[in-house]
Length: 118
Image 1: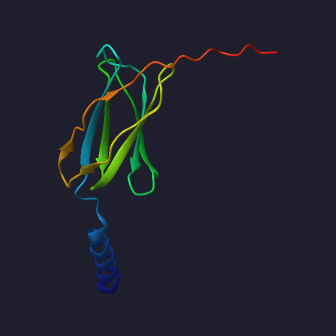
Image 2 (image 1 turned 90 degrees about the vertical axis):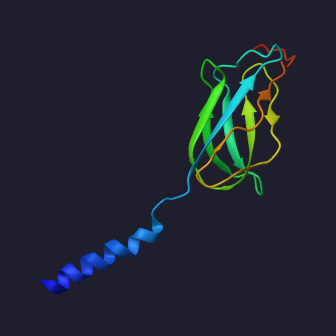
């Protein structure tokens, strides 16, 4: 019985170093050309070094996207929305246990015409 307890205790304590620590929050504001919030824009958080997708969020009525539990690193955003050009932000750094709010992203309208179905 003591052996079983010792084994369970050692397994439990060996997992402690793998607990998630140092996670941060990133908030981004997405605006249009008239400085109005863009609702429903897709915000992709990408690792700066290789553009790997880390997390995705959708902007709310205020044009805000909230990304939680982000590990410290350097990232960039790719923002897309129907009727607007795709925007790729400049890299920014997220520090451990801090909130990051990079500069707002400004979307510009695209002049695209839908092709008819034939």
